[in-house]
Length: 150
Image 1: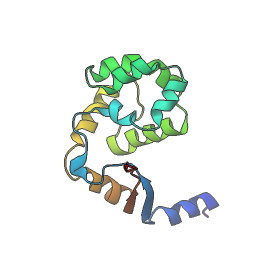
Image 2: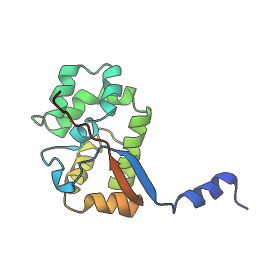
Image 3: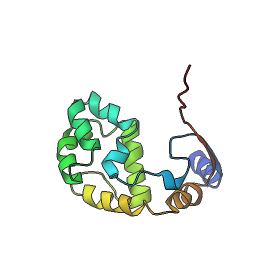
Image 4: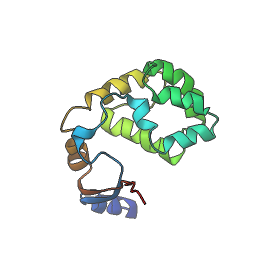
């Protein structure tokens, strides 16, 4: 006999999703190619958790600029990553690392592997494979800010 959690899970899993707040580029071809996994992960809300954990803004800027290797960036980032590992944003990134790239935990032993797999995902068709195929997102509403002159 199924419990309520299992019944809900079985009901929810096959549903198609409408993503009502997306920050991805409107076209996959617009995706930044001069990047790495840390720059990608830290371009959104996760960076605030790290800064709250003590990461200096200067170090953050060095991490998101592509002058350092991923291993060098990780050495700067790791203490703050560990302090803030269990925030909602971090847990979501761990889940993405696991579900999309097959990496169980983001740490010094896996950061290079994760980055290599991420770089391979920059190929055309990745968005469709993941968003539509894996996560059944039927449509996404892009959350973009447009600046206008007054």
